[in-house]
Image (cartoon, rainbow, N blue to C red; front, side):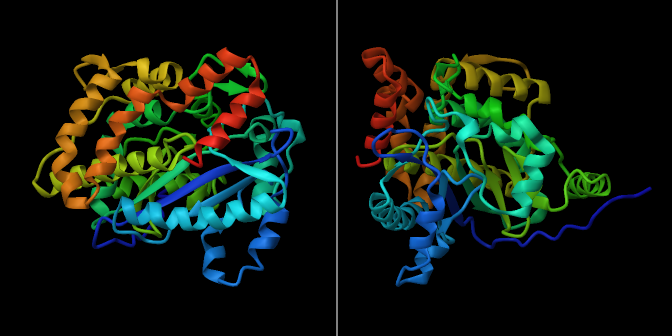
Length: 378
């Protein structure tokens, strides 16, 4: 039986950019998660400018708000778009007694106290995934980059996996879970992959392979809609983009700008190499899987596998060379300063390192939440 489903890809003539930035809502007094999204969105619905509300989205749980850009040309435009939405949300949040928390996980919240956003789709997901689904107290950043031809999408997805550990290590912000230090830089990465359609993508090279995969998924009832494929890097056919969902939640605008610029440059570089007739480098799935684990476990101290020949290197050393190599692309995309700022993250310490430092100094996870909330104002 041929289960192949035809999937149109709405190509983007330019390498446009879109960003989705998830935040947890935390109580100003207790610093625990707050199931107050319904109040927040009630206020959003009353905004004088309806277009502002279009940029502010609900998510699975009532403790979450997501800021979404329009279609942007570059990192600076995307950050300006998000900053405008964030100002609106923070003003509303202040009025209902909550703050925005930009970590990948909350240090001490308990999943059993969290409420689901009313939605048949969300209810069905929880019914299917049960304990693992209810555990999903996780927040991240998703970046879309426009692709001008369908046949480029899957080679780019597969090759971009070589830089998966760099993106995860830089953004890792989820070391603590339910009152304990997990020992991981990104516990979020480990948690999210427990959902049946989440985790690393299959490394398809041809669009027809993806169509056969989707057909099998739909025929067997694993998914009903394409967006239920929750891979860490995935095609987004209706938008004409590759969507990179690797990064943990981000707590500062400066770090977000750096990560967005890095992702934009990485994708455009691969796109240009395809245009030049180059075969993009890929690694075996078992090497990609190991790199994900190493980055989640060790963060910026990870020794990663850099190529199919199994050469290894400290992730920050490899990052330095990548930033240098991508600088001409950054000039093209008008994000030179933002790309250069990525090098500041290891010097300053990634979020997971900063959180652990606060906890080591105070022994108080409330202080950790305070610190992450405070970083958003910098």
